[in-house]
Image (cartoon, rainbow, N blue to C red; front, side, top):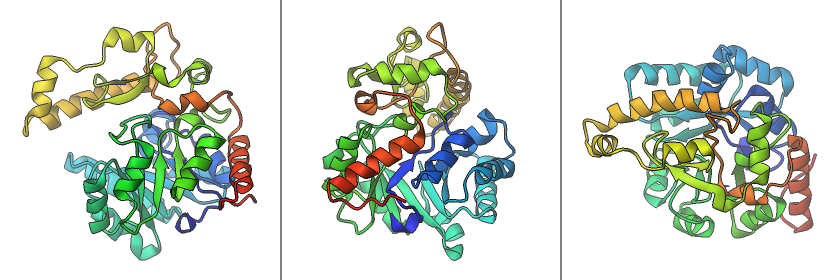
Length: 326
């Protein structure tokens, strides 16, 4: 991932609500790439956006990235995202991960100053649209990912999008060194990890959330429609069991309608923002809507970010794969 300006092909994926400045900075300082999530930075962790970037910059002078959720919604949200991108560029951010929309306008905005855009994809048709929009790489979200997982398994997704001439980053199912090495051997340019970085000293999630990740196995991961209207990978906690996994009849009807689906998604988004924000520090006594992917099966400890990246790098180097250790 030379175009990201990083030493080690590991991305700390942007997470709502878990991407606190200390976590983002630690991933970049260790030689990977920390990606900030604007809504987490401002809504959850309480920073003015520019001040939040400067907080991260006070902790590391290495490259960082920004996540831009660009799904077509309100004009107000679009303007806010444009402002966030402009501020990021002014503060020296040059790597952007786009999700849930058409990224052509982001490419046009950042490319003139040397910015690079990698686009989240779950299958070939979205990868082709990203290519047509001029993106510089793909984040391939497979069926083992946390958050909104894709339908294809790790190798099948690379086979599906790997011939388009763009670097492809594996997102999902990487929790330990062996899985990292396996992804690079398949031909991925790097990996993006979220769940693994929640269970770290630098993440501000509750100790119980982190320990639940350590104790969980992949059978404990379920997909719930009740948070956003589309399946989200979460740990099967008591709160999730009480809430249920399927959207109700009215919600499902609205989500199928061309005119009503945006209203229903907005309702879900507002509700889930508050639920997930509370869940960051919640315990199993209530509110534990904890996102995680199936990589939990490879996570055995809560440890510093630098230790994880160093160990992964050493494993790749021992396997004769390209991963630099500074």
